[in-house]
Image (cartoon, rainbow, N blue to C red; front, side):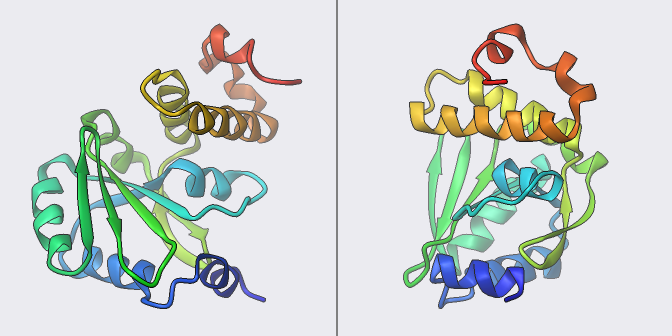
Length: 174
C-alpha cells in the first residue's frame, strides 16, 4: 500500500481535505512549508499522525484564513488556525506564530504522505519542536510527543544535539 493511500485510510479522509487544501495553497500562490510531526517524518522513521502542521508566509495568513473559511471549518486560536472538515479525521494546523515565518526560506521539497511538499529544514523542524516542548501552555501529552519527536530527530542527526537545551536533553531517554 502506498503511503498516501495508507494515510487516507487511517485518517478516514473521505472529503479529500489534504488534497483540496494543498491545491488551494498552490492555486493562490500561498508560500508554505510542512512543520511539526509530519516534517519529523520526512527526516526520521515515519509514525502515524492525524495532524498536518504548516507554516504560512506571515504576510499571507489573513488571506489564508479568509480563503479557508470559504471551504473548510476554521477555528482561530492564539497561535494557530485549525482547519477541519466533516467526514475526515485529518487536522490541519496553520501556525500563526511569526517565529515560523523564516522556516519557508530554508524549506525544500521532500516526500511526505506520498506527496512532494515543501518541508522545513531539519534544523528548523527541531527548533519548532523545542519551542513546542518548552511551551507550558501545551497539554502534557503534546509536550511528551514533542520530546519523542526531538529524540527521533537526534537519532538521525546527532550533530544537532548541541542545539537542544539541557532541560530538554535531561528529559530524553538514551
